[in-house]
Image 1 (cartoon, rainbow, N blue to C red):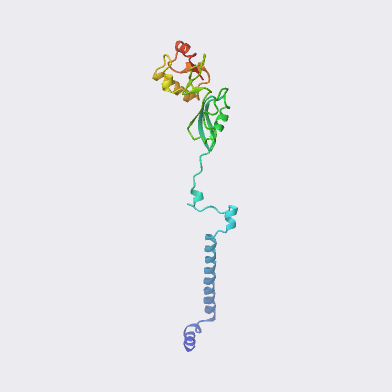
Image 2: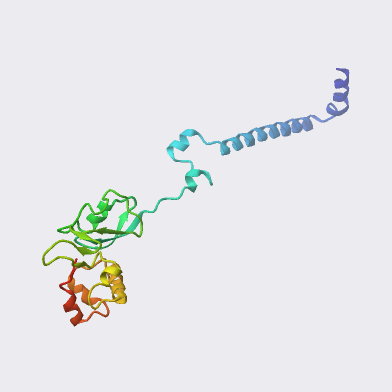
Length: 210
């Protein structure tokens, strides 16, 4: 106590009353400022659970929710074969083969609905082919006038090459036309392929089918 009293006598009591009050006020202001700054710092770093649930607080940068890529909104699919409107269609992501068929106007008469899995999810850029009843590998099977007709919408290059007057080059042009136009809609469309003139078309029209 004597030591404390000695310090007060040497340093504190000689100070004027106004200086003492100023010193005490400055010390109190420093303490209050430290408390306020500490409170604000804690509030800026803390987000209540109610803010997250209400959506008022954004996800922090780099969080899994912010970094997760959104799936593609749509896919492009080409539908050919025994459908009413062959072509390329934009479908919502996750669509099935059946959705692609409906987009193309539905099944055409004589469509073999079991020729593909209608419940399968389609992929972007793929071709959905619906076969005609009795058609295998691009050719009709059976007896009578329609036996062994080459299906323009299903036949491959090798099958098309079996037609009279059609070599590998014309066969590839037929397939290219089919891909570019969503398939053949009538036998007369075959005459639009470069290199197939009127005389060749006359020979082919009774040997091909859709």
